[in-house]
Amino acid sequence: MQEIVIREAQSEDAEKVIIFTKQIGGESENLSYGSEGLAMSPEQEMYFLNSMKEDAHSVFFTAWQGSELVGTANLSGLSRRMGHRAELGIAVAKAEWGKGIGSSLMNVIIEYARKNGIEIISLEVRADNTRAIHLYKKFDFKSIGIMPAFFKIGSEYIDFQLMYLDLR
Image (cartoon, rainbow, N blue to C red; front, side):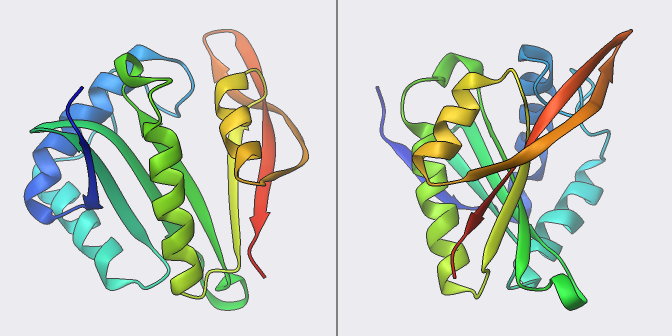
């Protein structure tokens, strides 16, 4: 296996990020979108990636195996009275599950949070996504409850677990 390189996303990564979101959206039903991806143009994605770089409480990391994008992780900082918090999003290509990429991305994200004054990281995860929940618990995320019917895929309602990591 080629070495995985994790780095902050650059605006020139926009097209690969768009392709990646379509790929991972079609590989599982754990994300808020399917194979259509996030329906962003390359210009919109470039703007998004640049705006993440401008906000010290937000970041978008990419994991690369050679020239192939195999994972992403981002923190979206909140504002005003919630400025000490950020929401986490993480995704790894299904072919790479179980190879440590998620853990590597989590290490980089948590280090970034500590260095940039983010005190609490929160996330929502499908309550039946045991792989992801195991990863989050490995990094000391705590469950704070279940949100019933968080997703609706077709006629099926899916509960989500709400989790957080307190870095104070």
